[in-house]
Length: 350
Image 1 (cartoon, helix red, strand yellow):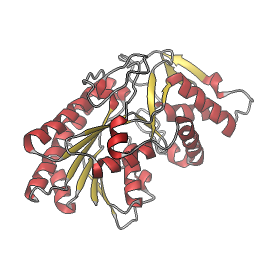
Image 2: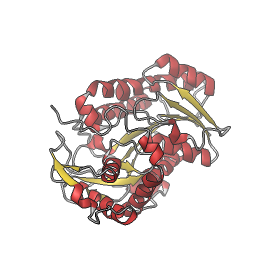
Image 3: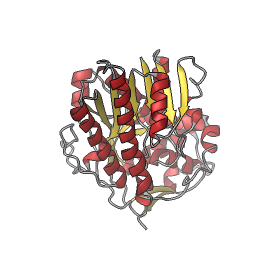
Image 4: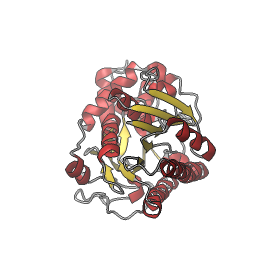
């Protein structure tokens, strides 16, 4: 199968690219190379004859038409997006343009290509989204997001992703474009750009800096190892039912404070502080994010029952692998330290 992967130089997209090549697929990586992208993420497969790279912006419709015409993909995996909630609070315009208008452009380019190709039945447009479109959950562990949960986005980021989800469904219902959708929980793992919680904690700890925890640290997330997510995404694009959405979760709920404490314990073992104290001493509670959702949790029953997928690692196993990866790949993250916004608190609402 020839896959057109948008955002393939980003965190989740690069995991998809690496796994797809390893499994014998052809991959066209379309990426605008914005601040969070890094071609080093796909360096391991870049010389493969099955890999091609196209630098293009999903806001540029003409460029998208050219890529479709040149490569003739069998399926699209649309991951390109602005994804940082804090940045969406400070600058929502980029999220509207990329996540909504960019997805519209992708849908129209895909529809044109699919129609001109005679509407092949095997073609798929897989839209990859987030559980944040569903809003916030109460603390009750019996309550989880399902694919039927009403949308209730609370941030500019989640609102832009909700809008893109609705566009994809509309293009399926109105034009017959063969689509599948997936909504995932919080990803973590190797090559995670150092602006999200887990890499920020790891790198701040190593640098002897404060480990910022928003509010009281009680906000709960379901954590999904990125390589497990890539595995699920390849399954959905190949076997998912047309027009169907699939919630992909890690089955690993943890509060932010629990997560940070776990990271500190792993670092205490793998890279002890010179003064013999725990990295937990660096934890600092900071002002909460405006509109911070209390809890996300996914009910993964549909993807488990219909496609037979479950995550392969617990959050503790995944965090240990992640910490070790950052310890072993200092050159990768050092090169990103000067990029816009890295190391600064964003999204305070001021």
